[in-house]
Length: 312
Length: 133
Image 1 (cartoon, chains in turn orange, brown):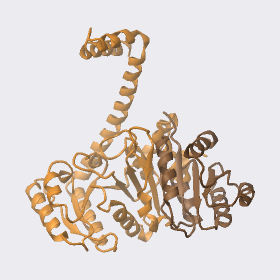
Image 2 (cartoon, chains in turn blue, red; image 1 turned 90 degrees about the vertical axis):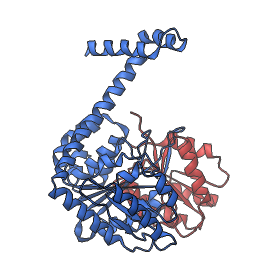
Image 3 (spheres, rainbow over the protein chains, first blue to last red; image 1 turned 120 degrees about the vertical axis):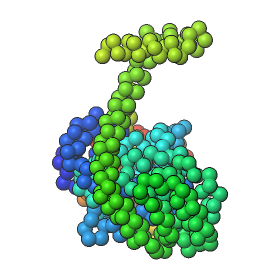
Image 4 (tube, rainbow over the protein chains, first blue to last red; image 1 turned 60 degrees about the horizontal axis):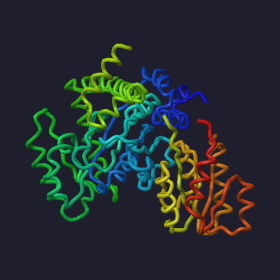
């Protein structure tokens, strides 16, 4: 299977395999990304985040169905938490995404966080490049059920949608810092239930205070379950997109994303290299000394850095 | 880095009882595998398509309705059609002993009946995952 050619031709099996390579940090991933990166930068990437149980997966599924009309291709990356103990994961977002499983224009991939704490996995970034190169018009990235600080999705998407549900009044107060600050569009889902107006009003009051960028994030009430109001979400995303384009901020975002692509790979490589340094037999004695309190971590780090940079 | 085993736990057919499938999903997770769970009442077409999109190594089918002789081989056929003949397919649920040879002849590589220790299924998958990376 020529995975690179397959990805560029939009072949599902190749796309799936490419994402596995990226996730597994397979040696072939680097070569693949080299081969497809020039074809990226065309998809519009939307991130969706929010607390567990607010209906992110159902909303994503509805949005994907609507976005895929008119032969538009929609790629979904749905992230669920990896167990820090076993390294395994139950990826259950698809349970609520079945309407679109057999749609030829929708591709869904479930991903485990695999140790990342920011609500997405470190492979999500490159998986999104794979979908981009494969010709998807829209990429939807759904984070794990996020609380306050899982804001990484903001760095991988152009428009961030924060999803909430009625009855979250006090929680919204508590979320003021963190995910409340990254929302370009706020969605109060389950609007058919009691308390949706109150939640929407509370979100609006917080959002009003913090919009100094020139973009005023709309607060929308929808019911993903009943398939109501989904158009308004797409409309709001479209408006945010136009605003980004017209203000030149989309180009800025693309440039900073490219920078982050480099930074993340650099970080991963350095971390791996440094970890390998620590495994060297010569350092074991020094590490033992730290354990025995005859030395300290800073001293050993200085040694490692000196040796590392001298060598390279 | 390591290749994590990805398992699709799927329930084809019309029975709505997925306790067993969920317990297995959890056991696979605790064994360090990534488990994609589909929910109940899926068609063989949906299951095969999910397997393709998710690039899984294993499809674990559970059926309690008695339709396994129709549904399980259908999933295998569709996987082969999609070029995924190297995916390990196993089955479980309420499956009479006399049906097992038929299923094995149709590409279901192992069948785990009621009472199979979780460790047995986990170990089987670990040692039989065969697809080329």
